[in-house]
Amino acid sequence: MTLLVIDMQQSFIFRHEQFPRYGQTIDAVKEEIIAAKKREDFIVFVEFCTESRRKEKFNKYPSRIAPTLGELTNLTINYFNKIFVYKKSCDGGAEVLSALKHYQIPKKNIRVCGVYTNACVRETVKTIADNLSGSTLSVIGNAVTSSGGDDWQHDNGIHLLKKMNDNVVVV
Image (cartoon, rainbow, N blue to C red; front, side, top):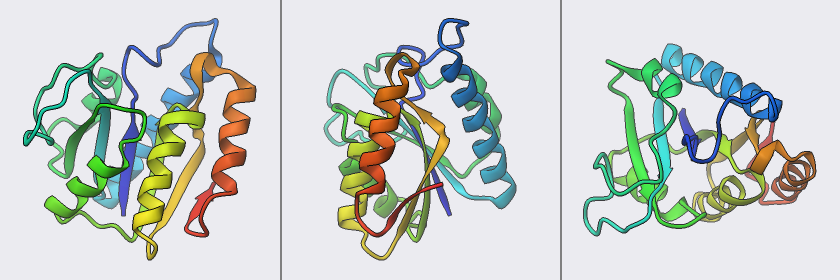
């Protein structure tokens, strides 16, 4: 199994009492990372960046908006089944697919968490689902959120994910 952690970067999500859904999402993603480590799954951190790195797609340090939250990446210190993938748009599907192939990461069962449900998560999942028809992509409903923790955007994103390909499920 593989866990995708999409855009859990300080610029997009943070702990603040005004946005309780953000804190709940961060905690749910932590649980997913801990469970993935116990299963010895691959963990793919997907980060939005501001410039393309040409051939240097994986495990490099491009000009990123901000790194993935330290409270998440610190859970993977000394964990070797992890990589970082960088994307320049909402849809990171092509970059993830390239990394899965390059590193021979399992593609059969992919769990997905991150931000934003209605944009980056949805678009990345769609690209992967369209190109990996034999795989199951499970979007973890309590481990995704939308801009500002907005319920309408989150619920709309979940609705659109549920209407997607047969190989996409929301759990």
